[in-house]
Image (cartoon, rainbow, N blue to C red):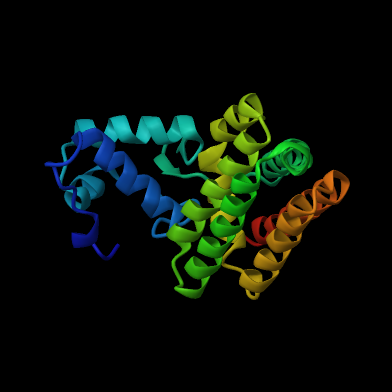
Length: 224
């Protein structure tokens, strides 16, 4: 494994555990650790510059998020997303996001709708800069604004509970060839429907977007 200096944890800003968790989560979502790759405690201690107890606590947290799994007789490893479980995640996304899109079109303020467009601009810029981490961050901001503008607070809590798994899958799909242009096109169509206050069109655009990425993820997972 390379880039050990880039993963060293600074102790002065926040708690050691929180910073280590953030570093490890980012490394998994950036695919510096590949699906199925073993996570050896001693190597992680050296790479992160923290104690084994901190590493073990962080691995337990990541396992609870679904990013790490314990393989019998082998130990912890980066989770290989299961195609059947991934399909369920996209099913949940399709149901909740499309309803949020419809409600957003009908009830969101003009300021919130403008903010959605600005969030898409940030996603576009992150794609152009070749920064998958920023794409994930900006995409999360977009969906948070979408759900909260729609008044779907409980639905957003459900989506947030799957946040790490969603971003793990999203990290795979945004890396596919041509995904930048198609993803931004899909989101612009969704935003346009919301701006026109067309709830049915927003619902359809959101569902079509989720169905597209579900198909991409299914193909990718079939090749892992």
